[in-house]
Image (cartoon, rainbow, N blue to C red; front, side, top):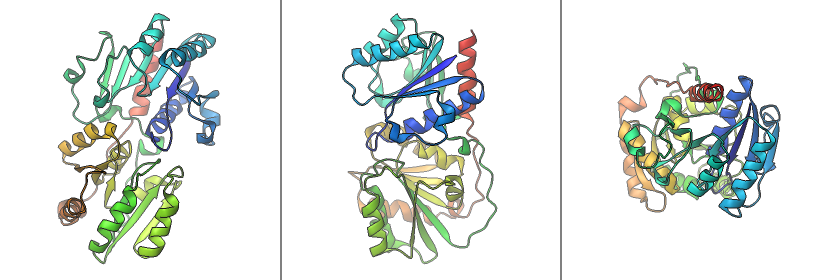
Length: 342
């Protein structure tokens, strides 16, 4: 069986879609399925993609719903028995009905902010504390299987089973990361606001993606303002170890929040896009995070107050981290394969 992924990725859209689809493809490939990637430019391929995907079809422009759905249908027909994974917010009801007319089946990622009719056979929404009643007005396929909550969050394989780090560091490390794409100025905003208030035994650890267009100015800012208090990493190979070495984090509201939770970190969230708002609020409701608003609206005083509240909370800062298992990629892969068999 061939699994065809259709998704969108760029420095502005972010890399959460690509990371989770790549992870799911990895799990499906390990279980004997063939995978095709449709959408992302080839510049976003990494070495492991040569093993995971039997084909990678870039789509430079989204011309129309009709044209894009026709393209995907043609790819599906060429591969006969197939199943689709849709992780693109541009896919509307008309697009889905075109797929359904051709008898295609698919899994679709959903977020509350995109509450619109969904005709998928499997609907996945990993937001904490979400309930199926919240989707009753948008689920059109009454036979659809709903995969809801963090247990179905799909993270990179290295975050699926994080091993505890028993190294004790007397100095406290504050992680600052806004995902793999454009940070929209969030990193410098956090550093410039909090550095003057940083206790002596604290240090910042910045993690950024190579596709963040602001990396150069961030590096320059650190060199000029805090080289002895800030370490910066761009696409580090061992991300898990860096996360485990930190005590708390300041982050955007995307997929990284689940990765932080897998490493037992509490975090402050500053959302950078509209599709992060509901998820950010949901994390705050769990008590694992503090959501202080959208980047464009967050004041320095609000960030300082939230930061001080967290670093002065001994239960958070000095606790023995409780790691959380995230094996959603394998669970979802098994559910897809079961759907293919039936």
